[in-house]
Image 1 (tube, one colour):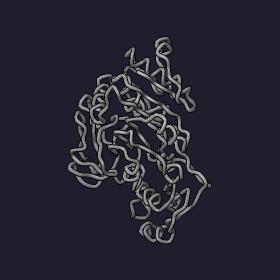
Image 2 (tube, rainbow, N blue to C red):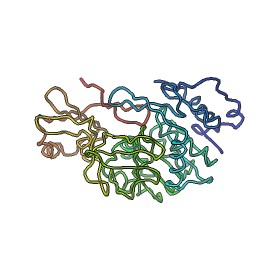
Image 3 (cartoon, one colour):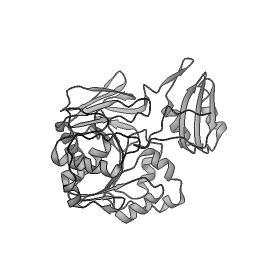
Image 4 (cartoon, helix red, strand yellow):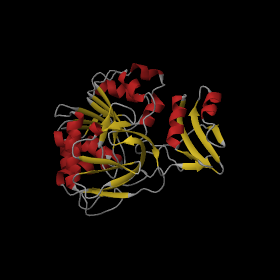
Amino acid sequence: MKIFIDGEQISQQWISDYTLSSPVDCYSDKPDWEQNVLKLLHNWYSQSGYSYGHRGDKFVNLSTSGTTGFPQHIGHTKETIEQVVDANIKTLGLDKNSKILSYYSPRGIAFSVLSVYLALKLDCELYIETFKGIDYVNRVHEIRPTHTLLLPNVWKTLHKHDKWKTLDYSSLQTVITGSDFTPTGMLDELREHNPDKVYNVYGSTEVPPIVLYSEEENTYTIDSIVPGAELDIVNGQIACKWSSQPNIWISGDCVDGDRNRFTLYGRKHNMFKQNTVRVYPEQVEKAAVAAGAELALCQQVGNYCILYYTGDIEDIKTFNDNHKYIPRFRLRAVNNIEIDDNLKKIIRTQKFV
């Protein structure tokens, strides 16, 4: 196994010498991320478990992203983590010759079960990168990975860059995207760079990914359910769990359709009403990005529904006309919309002047 952090290989001796004498608290606004990676490695080897945010008797204790409020603490058993890792290996077609390219995440489950633990289980190469903007293209060309995860908001900020046009994904067997709503056209645009497969995937801190995978944007069928995962639609929301988990989790992710075929359209906790109109911010934001904006955040501010956006909406009149159904709808161009340091999700609690 070879693990690289920003191009520098971690020596096997360093890993072996790095010991933990007490439970690890990795949850921090400014983590020492190299030590956090080493702690993940050692805890897997020692099977003693690790903790993101609080200590407990679970193998994995961690926190949700907290982009809609305060982070929630979640625990998972070793049995569940091993089940997820084994399922991901099969779903993604990984083996000992794979080369995984992964962005570093300071907390949450995806970084573990979609990169670090896969490499440890398979004894394959893992390249962990901190986000450095459009230099991502250079790193893909230098590493020539076989598998990678590209986050939606990273794609939004990079794909209009001139250098992005040169991106060569031909070494990649699988590219996955998830953690947030997938923008219109993202999967097709990624396919233009010649990977073998591009998947939209679904999972959560509560029910670790990958629970669902699909070649369509935000749309899944009964065949999308990964073996070992259990899923149903309850009150219009995704409800799921791994077979090793005791209780089903009601996600709050709202869908159109039934278990045979359904499309994500918004989160219950983000929805708000303008008079009698239910507004799902994700749909307005998705439309803004499709219309040319880079990032977008739809909020209820007083009696108004305001869409803040960066970049340019190409036809503002048409965009406003398409959203006349929302009472007191307004557009506001801003210089910056904050995203978190973990899965690059938009921070929904941020305020604008």
